[in-house]
Image (cartoon, helix red, strand yellow):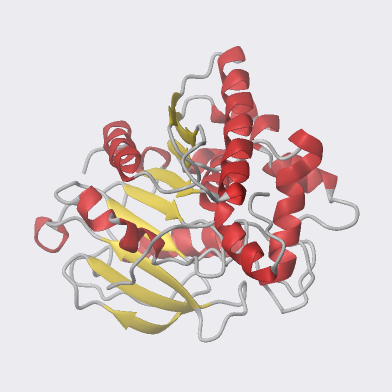
Length: 331
C-alpha cells in the first residue's frame, strides 16, 4: 500500500510505508529452555551463524527450506536483565519490522528496544520478515521459496519455545509490529487465534479492501519489486480472494475477542514527504474502520491517534510493552 514513489528507489523507501525506520543489529539470545542447554537446531531451522556475546541481545542466522535466503534469515532475541541468573520462565513478545529496502530484523535495535525493555520481565523475539514479505506465503515467487508465514508460525515459534524459558501458551505470548509488521501482527493474531493473548499494530494497515484494495495492491506491487522478481503476495491481475479475506483484519473481527488490542496511527501533517503522508493517511482510515467494527462487536481495544506521519513512536512502544507485560502471564 503506502509509499509507491515513481522510481524503484521510492518504491523501496516507500515499502517502508510498511517499512521501518530504525534498527541496529545485535547480539543474540540466551541459552535454552533448560538452564544448562545450548541453543540448537530444531523445527526445520539450522543455525549457521550466532553471536551470544552480549548479556541481553543474542543474534542467530537460520537456514530454512521455507525461505531460500543465503546464508539464512536473521533473528535477534532480547533477554531480560536477569535471564541468566533467575531461572524464571518469561512471557514473550514477537516484534515485527516494517518493509523497505533496508528493513530487517535489526530495525527495533536501532529504534531503542533495549532501553524500552530495560529491567522488564519479558523476552522479545525480532525476526526477519523480508523487505516486503508481508508476513505471508506468496501466491507466486520467481526467486524460490519466500514463505515467511510458515517460517514464523510453524518454525520460529516452536524453535524459540524449545530453546528459551518462555511460556508456550496463549497467555504467555504477544505479537506487535510497525507498519508492514503491524499488519503482520494483526493477521497472525486473528489467523492463529489461540497463539497470542495480546496484539498491537503501530502504524499498520488494518483494512485491505478499502479504497479499491489499495493495501492489497501495494502488497503485490512492493513484493514484486523488492522480493519476488515479479511474483506477488496475493496474485495478479486477479487476487486469491480467499487469501485476502483470511488475512484482512476488518473481515475477521470476532477473532480479536478476548485479546488485548493496541492500535497507534498518525494523524498526518508532520512530514514534507508526500508519500509518507499518504501512507499514514491510509493507515489511519483503515484503523478507524477497524476500531469502529471492534466497537460495534463490543470488543475492547486501546487506540491512539498521534500527530505526525509514518514513523516509529518510541513512547507508544514503551506504553505498549508495559501493557503487554500487564496482560500476559507473569514471569
